[in-house]
Length: 113
Image 1 (tube, rainbow, N blue to C red):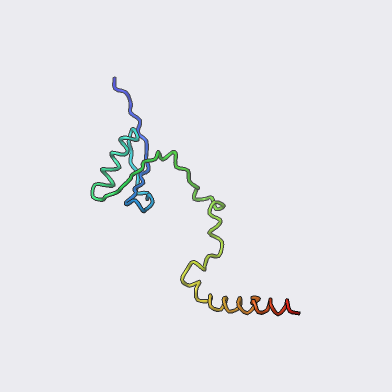
Image 2: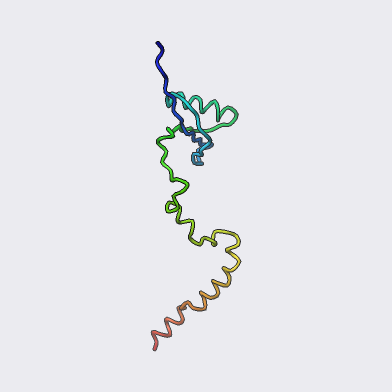
């Protein structure tokens, strides 16, 4: 009687060169981590080169659910300064700031009084 082999899903991460981070490239199904590495090399690195490859059991990857709005709440904050369109009014904001800012001359004059 033949024993039943259990297959797990492994997520595959590849590092293209030593100065870059690992990037998720897909998933493989294998009965062990060693075979998952071998299958991942065959599937994802047959034509490409890389310096490192990781396989991680899918059940060990912790993630947020798509419905969990609290986990991604920082996306609600105004981050227009990161976008090109956010730079158009920076000159006006800087001018207003400089008009309100105290200069060294103002401090020296206040100390003399």
